[in-house]
Image 1 (cartoon, protein in one colour):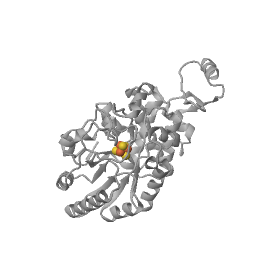
Image 2 (cartoon, rainbow, N blue to C red):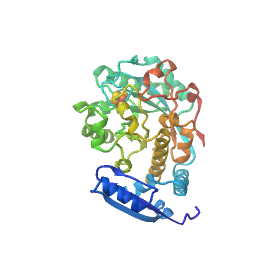
Image 3 (spheres, rainbow, N blue to C red):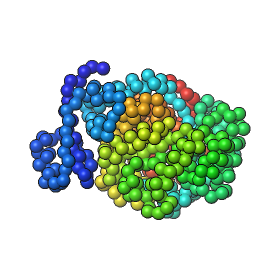
Length: 378
Ligand code: SF4
């Protein structure tokens, strides 16, 4: 990698406001900060870009600096993450067929279009035959695995139905098709029963590692407790699943410090796979009213790419999904994410007639042609 020489990166930390990079003169910026926020902690650092990128371990400050990179420094980050990706997980892209099994949900997350409180959508649940047809398609197309995702429910009928479907998929594929579940918080008994019925991986997104921000994204009740979410993640790990998690990027109220903490959370919990992507607002949700306080979609997309690249450097052999939300914000979003450090894509195998009903956010791209590809090199 060519030397970029030295560059300077100013980092401003404010107890209340989080982080603010600026291209304007330091003195001027300090004056503005100290006028508005007299309690500032102001730190700055001069650093060689290559030196930072080659560090064995990134602390929170390092990650904040990386998240703020622009120009040559940003190009160097992407080049480095691509090298690390190729060296550790190769050029192969893993396809996981996604089944959006049901949009019935007991929860009411403030950012989600499928939330219980949204009365404007028709609720659906796939039939057993439709699930098994999608599993057959995934098998025929040589997908390594299947992801079954749905709104969160823990009633007995739902829990048993999932167990039954897992056993049927195992029978149908002779155990060849690995199954990932993304069905939210459940009891230890349920996790265990689903694991014994054939599930291998479990994806439980924490959405943010900051409890205060989590509170702003969810109603304050037992059903939406941050502590319960963390406990569920531990339970999944203890039950023997390969564990996935994820966060939203570019949320209102979110700072770069929060995102840096998210990446450290993923590393410290030794997560096996990550599905993180830009937050995209949905009109029929409470969080929509804060849309003016967010970064532009272009900025949220770029921030997501940086998160992917930095995570690849922090955890060289982790599986990172190029998510649909990335594709929604940029026509080549998934391809760019794959070049930036991701190595998994999840083509949607849900029958077309249901897809309108599973809009977690607005303008999601879902096309049939996504389902017809196998594992192939970049
Ligand atoms: S994010 Fe998940 S749990 Fe929350 S409302 Fe949407 S589908 Fe339900």
